[in-house]
Image 1 (tube, helix red, strand yellow):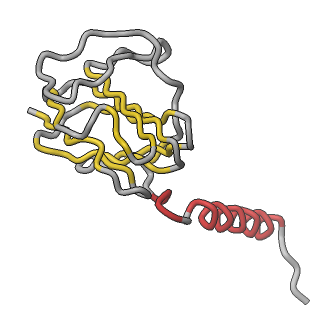
Image 2 (image 1 turned 90 degrees about the vertical axis):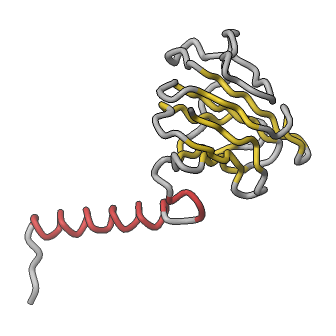
Length: 154
């Protein structure tokens, strides 16, 4: 006859909980640990960076988050990107916040920085990061495979 001790029961419960969490988290593109849930939309205006080239993003840092050095706001409707796709230049070391609102559920991804955010249909999703790597980085959606813009960090 096999008798479980309380220690074995607790270990079995932890293992079951871990397996359940792994099964839930392991589906689709959500296995990227940098994917975040969307944040509230930005509300007040801030001056655009002098280093910005077309397209000119809408600047609007959120009152609950620290002010970003460079706020980039993009809207996607019927596969059309506003402002239109182009290059946006930021300085190395700047705090960058990218906020995207899409009319369909998707996932935002910043290449090179391996950051992402879920984009529920009609609700903004944001990523914020320190631009500490120089180069050219594509910012895109995963499901619809739209290139939103190219981020140039100098």
